[in-house]
Image 1 (cartoon, rainbow, N blue to C red):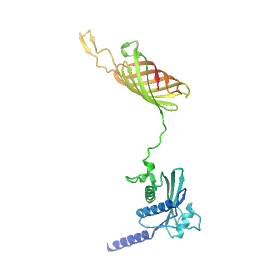
Image 2 (tube, rainbow, N blue to C red):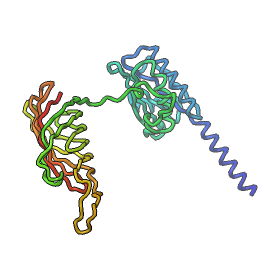
Image 3 (tube, helix red, strand yellow):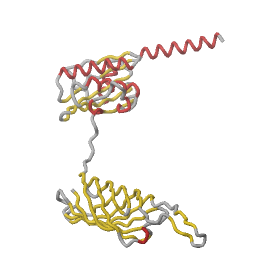
Image 4 (cartoon, one colour):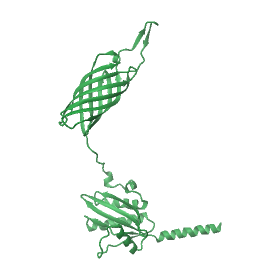
Length: 313
């Protein structure tokens, strides 16, 4: 047991000694489009943050005016060898418009292998303080900088809402008639009125429709717009819910002489196939002619064709 303890202590001591001997060198930060004070401050911040993240010695390789700036991995490894370092970090900053691009590479001096590499952006000079903290975390953990986000450690670019493609908002109404094909108490036709709101993209329109169609209906629709000209045929479909008003509350059974209550449900989900045409699509208003074939999944098996004319804006 004593021998086992001694062996453990020896290996533990050796591990501590090896770890203590390790040295991480920070290559001089090269920057394009930044002033000298910003470069010096960035180097100082990065070194300090690396010291917080690594247990072994972190040194800053001074810039030599007699040598060319260090741009690539080969040069950084040579600097690391000259500084007797085990590992070296190369960091490059470049201004692109208002943004600052930060590229960083963690290298093993002995093997020349890349241990980790990533890049990020800073929207302002002032944000480099936070960015350098994240760079040091990313190098220490060897994981992408996007995964090192923590409360109180968010960069300005991450705080911004991501840009999205815009769509043109539309709204309008249409009116016409519903022509029953099955169910609907065998009516000939009934007045139909609907209001719709949605968004138009280049070739797709999607939105919500609320309608009075022998009851009340609401659904979500998607239409494919076949052209981008003033005359634009379209087709698509919709899915939603339709509550249909039926006249019969029951029926008289002559055999039994009793009034039997009709317990069938008039409401249910509804699937709609749509085709139509838009006129004046390139203007800030449009005329529409819409033809729907709707199937309501209720106990009456209601099916109908709905034709409406309307205005979109």
